[in-house]
Image (cartoon, rainbow, N blue to C red; front, side):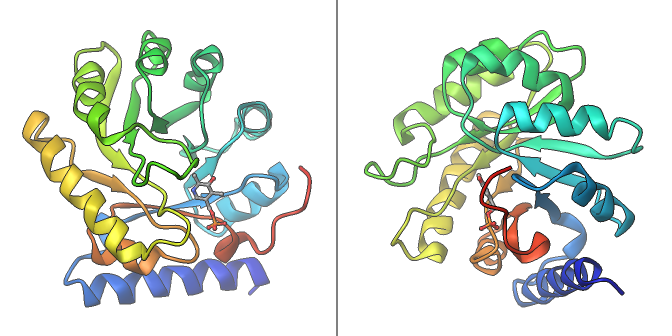
Length: 224
Ligand SMILES: *Cc1c(COP(=O)(O)O)cnc(C)c1O
């Protein structure tokens, strides 16, 4: 078994264990391997290890890798980074899921893609944290805008635990935002939360989509 295979197996094992603690089935949890800064060859190796969901946070890099790996059947690209409306249309060509919808202009730019795009509204859980996301006051309106837009489907809410915050407490707040959103769109049951350092806490608070980078890929190269 390669080092990469071993890390994938270890993360899967930890996901199963946390799911069991939460009384949940691991089958309802999607592990997204965040491959930013790593070459397409690493994504191909993850594919060989059985990974079918990968995440990227920069459009140009993601677009190039998706083009290079076009032949890998059933590989889903998730866009998880901050998104400018200028680039959103192009992101929608290769990404089936966008986790970082935080502005009306991004919703509008994603509309009209050739294929359906699943959207998460990214929620800013702290006002003084600049890791992206819509202020709480805007989240319901954005959710309604996604639901009303042809070609987009609202999957749920996404957040990054604020720096310095207790992740479990932050994810509990995200869960309550998710409850509010489900009143608008009952099918929007997904919660994108949890990274290498805090995915177990996210699972305990209902996360359905984990965005895990370094725990799977190892250390990121300094530059792509
Ligand atoms: C890089 C990144 C991740 C993965 O982070 P790790 O700490 O390497 O697991 C998750 N979510 C977003 C939005 C990211 O940019």
